[in-house]
Length: 110
Image (cartoon, rainbow, N blue to C red; front, top):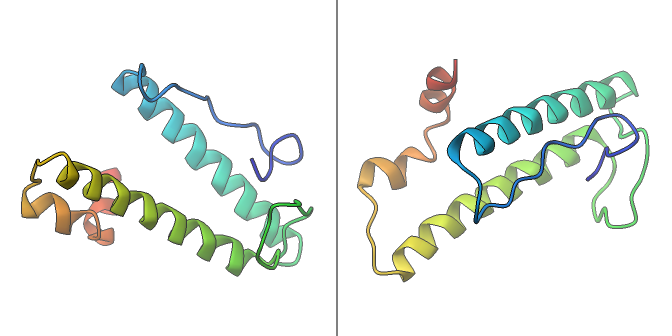
């Protein structure tokens, strides 16, 4: 949303209720590339977003931008775990603690 039509192409939108794993993986890869392009654009623009949005409630500096998205991603991880618990299911400890194992996830992604 933040760079749509300005610096990056919006990732493929999938309906999470109907998407298969291949569609989700493709959308995540596109989102990753869009974020990298947007971050590089910010760096090339003196560390600032090259545009502003009415909904941005933080300074347009790349550090604030990146911090916002890290917090946002963490929030969604917590929501997923909470929803599973509310549905009376339990994730293995390896999963609930594993979502915070950044170095391990990075190695797996490579």
